[in-house]
Length: 130
Image (cartoon, rainbow, N blue to C red; front, side, top):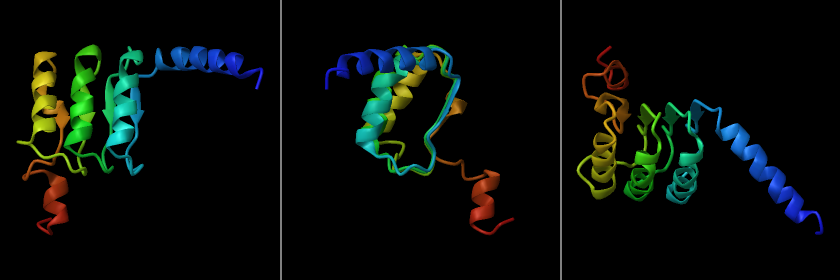
């Protein structure tokens, strides 16, 4: 349609304005996979004030973790990343790249959560110890 370029321009302006003010993104429980993570990762640098990204309970694998790792350095204000309840396992390539980039960006390793610590209250409750 003839108004397609105008719509694209308006969308780009809106996205830029929106992304510039967001501090928390919660994409938990959306059943997103690796291709979705590629899109999320590509957009992350636009979220210049983003402090917390919640991606728990999705279908993200090592591939998605790798996409995120590529953009972590561009996310200067990001302090917390939640990837629990996904298929991201420490020791595999994507998660190791993510850990490496998180450390390289001088972010607190405590707030890069890929799995629950075995002593956490959540885990203890899930296995019936509490």
